[in-house]
Image (cartoon, rainbow, N blue to C red; front, side, top):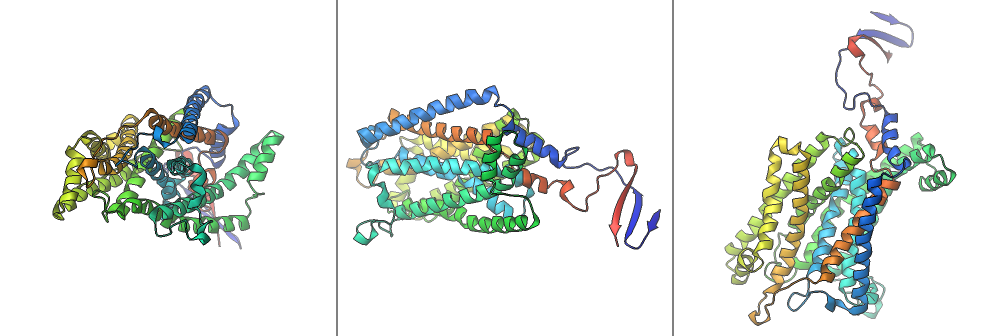
Length: 476
């Protein structure tokens, strides 16, 4: 039946029942769930976790100061292995930081709505990983008080820096990447900080959130400027994802050392960074999902898509491994051929085969849907990927260096306790920062999750339960 007047036609019709993406969940429920994590008291597991991680972080800081006051001789570096764990860890952490910008920028430009549940945590992970990465080049130079020479300040002296060196390109690429990532992460936080401000009960907390939210009121003009700025930053960040790790790879690809001197390094490094970054996102978000009971925000559909991306990037990395071996033999360069035979059948064979098993073989489990829907399997494969990506950097750097052109200079490398605990300490710093993040800031982008709910569509009308009559208005 239908009734008409001059402005509005009202249709009364029987609507069929159909499932929703989030059943019985309103936009207010999203705010209550996510903001409640910050507003409620910290659970006991959080205090235990941060006590453990901060202890590791503190011991890592002690190792750094011990290195600065004693010298880089406390590391296991030698001749010819002048680059060892320090640069291995630097490239490892830089790679971990790639998934955040990928999820936030590239998937935003591609209008992938599934990113909204994980982009905030991935962006924060990016910042913390880059902070951990920045530690190693500074302490690797030995005289850390001279690290400012990497900046273009003394350039008028025509001494430092050498702008033709990829090491200098690294400084500019990583610092630019970190700056844009901070801007992108904080801009996405502003609407949620305003939500936290409006919900805050204490005066101090309300004042802090008021300052951090920059007076956000959610008006139409503010949203229009926000969306434009977010889109521009996404466009700027997208080439950075490809350029930063490509620039890192130039540190090695522009050399003449067998095992490094290859043109496949830029795409190979980028694919590996995305692979390792997605693995770390799953490693962090699966426990957070269970501990905070966010199963209806970070759903199995999200995990399924991320597992498929893990499978894709892992397969790309496996293809790169095979192509490296093929090119070494096809090129008929005896030094290149020896470098790759030594990589897989030399004294460090265990590291190379561990790398191959973790990065290529284990992700193939993700072909099976049952494994993608099993959190134990997903977590195990993610941890294997994290370990495998570290071994990949160890294999590239240490194994390529320990046997160079001069057999009389060949020498094995063994890390010292300072090497090991400095690396473990950076994990403590990383996890401590992440625990502080999920305690004091919304770990899920509430405003973005709300934007993909069916209720956000102005033309959406919820179906009646049991198929009863529902009224909807259509303006003439």
